[in-house]
Length: 105
Ligand SMILES: [Zn+2]
Image (spheres, rainbow, N blue to C red):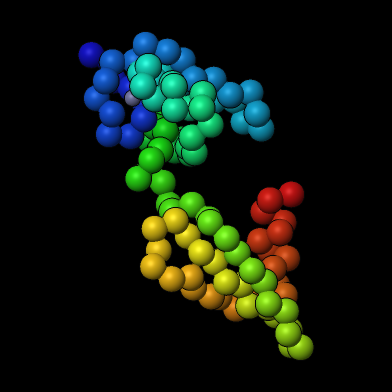
């Protein structure tokens, strides 16, 4: 019997979640997950395993970030993630910054 395309969900799919954004994607999902998807809950599609990743299976969400620019050839990025006890920092070279920016646009 078919099961919902959301990772770890064993419910029977009753709806189709379809996106026509950058990449067309269609998944068979249960009513509970369709409600969450319709409400805008975060998701990722793992095309390799043809499953939707949601909830605690997603990486922690970004809560806040700050970039501290100093004299030098890079910048310090401070990131706060949901569920973390304290923020962490990474130093980004100018090359890192360009590569990250290019991934989003
Ligand atoms: Zn489901």
